[in-house]
Length: 278
Image (cartoon, rainbow, N blue to C red):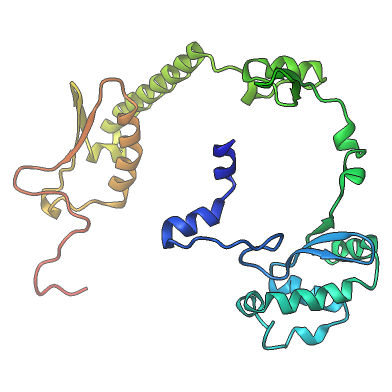
């Protein structure tokens, strides 16, 4: 349970880890956005998330308070956050003039995230809560039986089939033999590509400029353009970019070395002689 709670801390946890800021309690309000929280209407509470400037301006228009848009206290997000209590009071006063159904419909039509806040009487009879869900029985330390709607991992495929749904790939157990087969297939494919490159190397393919060989765990790619101080052409860059991943997939290769003749080393572009003109 602790791990589940930590996983939903998101930016609050990151803010503490990065800046050492301990978040304060803000109730149902959003910690960095306003207006964003629970507001009471004429009958029931609703949740509104007007997190952007466009959302805020549309909300002001819906509640008949366009004057708030240019109010220095609420003209931008940081200002609204500093004056959150004043802004929430103004919006709550406007929302109190109509019921929740009226405001939810208007807000959704305007593209502002919103929804009713249900109590138990309104929540439990809904289709989402009343539809059949498999459960597993367990026993508390006091020996009182209880149920959970989450099935153990090894039973989830069977539970899904019982509910009329086919198990997804995520719920299928991983087959080690199949994983090894896929990896071996990828290695064979890499070896075939390397062999094909080697065959083309003798027919003017760009690979002919970057010959390579494998000696035990070492694969050596050689750049040899001594007249240009081993400057790499575009074709050579392309050939190396294709060759290196394929060598990396070859069985037994642990290191790939790029080298040139002993007197020079590969460079990014050819040097011109002093005094030459472009």
